[in-house]
Amino acid sequence: MDGRLIYLMGPSGSGKDSLIAAARLPLQAMNCQIVRRVITRSAESVGEDARGVSPEEFVRLQRAGDFALAWQANGLSYGIPVQIDQWLKEGRDVLVNGSRANLRQAIERYPTLVPILLTVKDEVLRERLLGRGRETGEQVDDRIARNALFKERRSTDTSVHVIDNSGALVDAVNHLLELIRLSAAPDQI
Picture 1 (cartoon, rainbow, N blue to C red):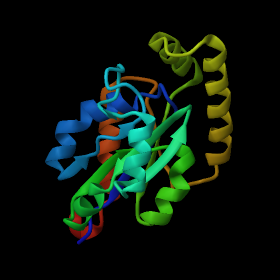
Picture 2 (tube, helix red, strand yellow):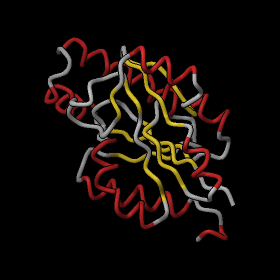
Picture 3 (cartoon, one colour):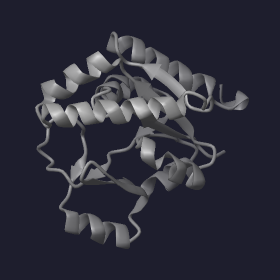
């Protein structure tokens, strides 16, 4: 039996990295592999446990076929290692920190993926983004506006599971684990 691709996405600042870190042990107990993305951002950047590479190295890896999925967003390049295909064939679930803009490409390659959108109230998102100090107030406002447009487009898409991470992180973790359990095939429960 093939495993499932759990495709976590949400706006920058929604808490995807915090959610993944907090859910790591229970996910591993559920035979779910958590993927370390490759990003053209310094490995010393605060937040996500990602492999930082130069733009040139990213292009080299992409041309070599080392990515199952790859995209650009916010001036950075992101890649999901092709190793996920082996884990899925072994029957393991695989959780990736994906991109809302790349969801269509991901569904084309992995039609049975479980899409999960992590949301957060605008005022909480603004506070988190400003607290990171990576962007100006104007850039944060632009992100909030893009997020509002995405929410409007997704409001009719019932295939995407939504988790609100505006409150306690433990609540979002429990919701994530429950979604993964409920989306399992009947013979996997």
